Picture 1 (tube, rainbow, N blue to C red):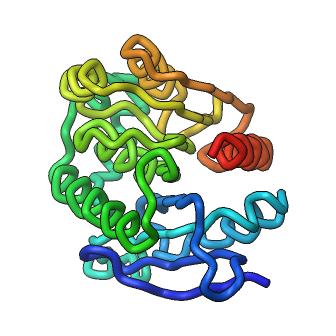
Picture 2: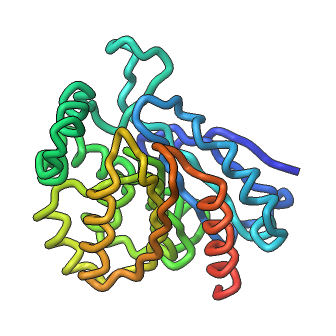
Length: 247
């Protein structure tokens, strides 16, 4: 049986999914953040998929899906949310010119506020469920992967796994410095070689930067667009099972 509820952690409204018997605490917390323009419930169906992939996960994990703080309705995207506003025309120009330095060197307006909100929410979840970093997985898709990366680096969080679906490198100098100061953590990263929104090369730069700083990065490329392929989900299920077994 899949349990679903909505709870607020910090300032963020969150969907919570597990299959634990009533009153049974989780041994692991999995926090996954949706991408730009998606509704707050966009990734919620990943919870049941992953829980049903292995009985070990069903008896151990609680999934939390935070809703990004920025409402995009005033920008003509009713129901859409964002961690920070994105100039899509500017992103398209960068992709057309392949001038990826303009993408990877920028610190977007609103990133720091989003990172602070998510970090506070994760800490509130950990307190509510009596869990620590070693029992927490943080990640997301696209912009959600970016904010998860920033939270881990900027706030010194050392999760059991940092899960990055189709993310990219931002704040190159700042992230490089913070990664070097971070104790490191396991990372699973996936990216499509045909991604038209966030090109493949900057994803490789993110991988290389994290590896150079001592992070253990498993990088899964796939021939596809800006998405989360089934093979990436299956691998994450395997990594979650491994984390539960270690605990």
